[in-house]
Length: 79
Image (cartoon, rainbow, N blue to C red; front, side, top):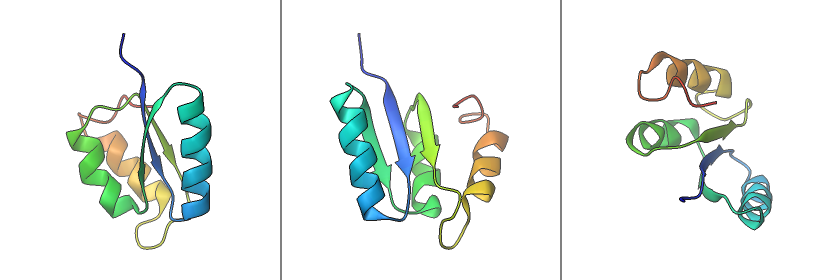
């Protein structure tokens, strides 16, 4: 059985490392990205079971990223 994959998007390195550490310790495969723009293409090209998204990102904010992900057939069903 494969591990569930989680994409974490946050611009703060400390938060990314903390979330990565804790989720990895629980057995998840965790991929981190530091910007919404960086994560959008990645989320569409790789399979993920969950996306953890910071709302307050520089550039494109988390709400806009979430709307973009929900409007795409490849990512709309990822919680």
